[in-house]
Image 1 (cartoon, rainbow, N blue to C red):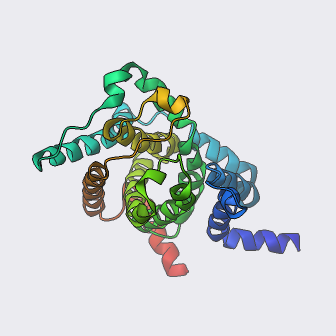
Image 2: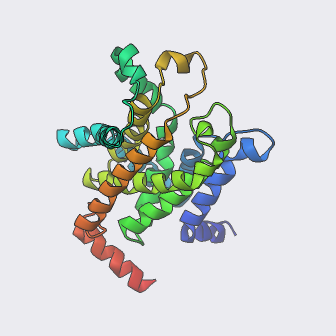
Image 3: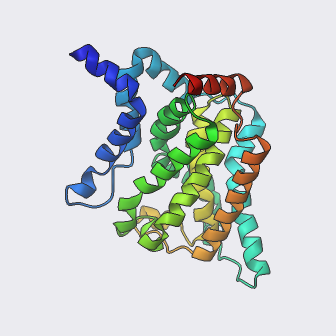
Length: 284
């Protein structure tokens, strides 16, 4: 009985993982509270890796989580590419007659930027044990990196639904009507992160934690009036200028589309692994 259940879980590891993600993460919401458990994807990952891959899988996950020797250029790209998206969006905004953002964070607390970046790192990005630590490698065993990115991005976006209904969350000021566009943004982010993950030899540190954090950090400090002291005081996240957020998202999406075209959908995945995916699909 035990072996048959284990065999079933291994055959349907991805479906089980995604089901666990929502089951665990949304506990506060579907039990009458609000919001979600941000570490739900990582808890689901640890459960599935322990069950499906055992000690060897947990060791591999840890090794990818601390893989930092990937070349200085990839550290620069990972940490600062999202800033270029924001600045390009601001440029388009100005050309269209818009006003320059207040840049409140850098006017008041520029010296706290590294501290704020690290502070943000211990929150949302740690969910990456699930999305890029477990789901992405498993999906790329069967489907192309582009399809894998679409699947993760769509579910990642929908997963944030409770936050659109919780006062004080970063998503709440956007309004529930922004959810479909938010899902589209997460698909774009997922494509970019898949490319970074594959180009850094499967570094969960760069393609997961750092990329996720940079994608959160730069839009907040450049496009809103957020301050670290305000967040530490428990103040709600400031309402974003949706025009700037949309323009930043458009720029990022154009870059993601360009990457998909230039790499022919491989998004940095080595040719030998692409060939293996094609073989696996013919055997399915």
